[in-house]
Image (tube, rainbow, N blue to C red):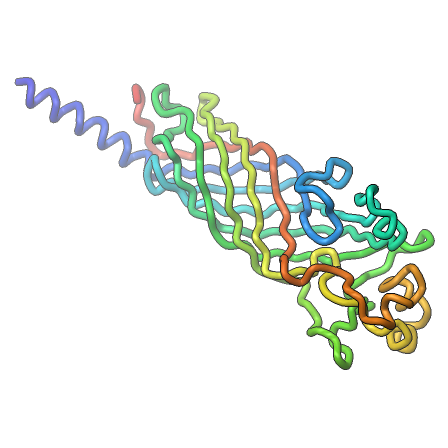
Length: 270
């Protein structure tokens, strides 16, 4: 009799978990974007923290694993002005801003079993990693006018002796941690911190050495030289270092998610 009750209990639990495997979620993301690279002095620069929004969806394989996908839109920026303790960096006066459009898919591991609308399995920390394709386009403002830095090849990209021109569409590896909590009535609240490990050093249009100032002026006019070297050409003509090519840039999405679970069947009491 005890064995029969145990079998019945396990069967109900198994059916409930199997039913949950059909769970899907759709929702929104609201948060911030943070850039880390040659024009950011600290890991987190409050005045460079920008807003981010997005949409997302999840498909639960089981209460421990789910597959998520999202389309996030954020803004990033950086400036030599962040290096207040370094007068030479402040005087150099390089800066950028860019939109980032991030399409990603990732596998999420729920450290604790998670079932939306469950009393017992309503909270879990989460680890995730995946693949992202993103678009960016760095610009800067000089004398009140905004310029497309990619167009002006400020480090001689694609010019004789310069590096290859970088693409505005790149791939990254999203990875991070999150927390999920079931609010009831199949609504879920999340908090996530997701680093994007990119494979480019040009989010900020700053990577390696100054290109020849006179060659940039010859191709683009005086504005070409000024965008590359606002001091006036001395550094450029000597090929001095402009950035650190040994460290790729990164960006981070941090914020809240609010999702609604779509379930064909409901296993009550779990």
